[in-house]
Length: 123
View 1: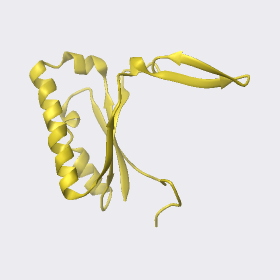
View 2: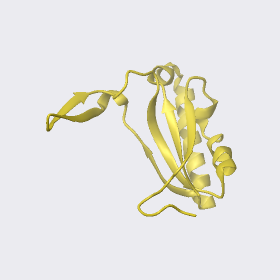
View 3: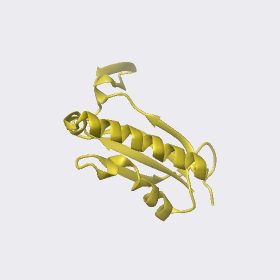
View 4: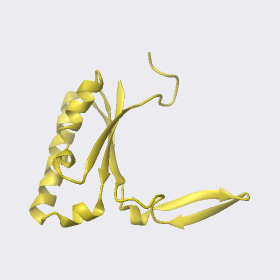
């Protein structure tokens, strides 16, 4: 079963971390990534640039309209994700709990099963 583990970041929370805490966060992700590779459960992972660098595109009257910044005015934004393939939701939650962001107040980790990917639904 495929699951998307999303890391929901709050830039203010990240900015408030000490240099040591930021380094530990990076080291923790590195160790988590290596463990997923070893177990064969990693499909891919991506980290996203700060939401202030985003562009929102909509089409109005047949013309694209581009707005700078995140889509929503919110404290939390998608910071990155791990796409994994594991046996069940319980295992996906177990893995998500090992992501260092989950232990930091004000950050979040969300687990969602992939409904389909480049083809029909899996049985």
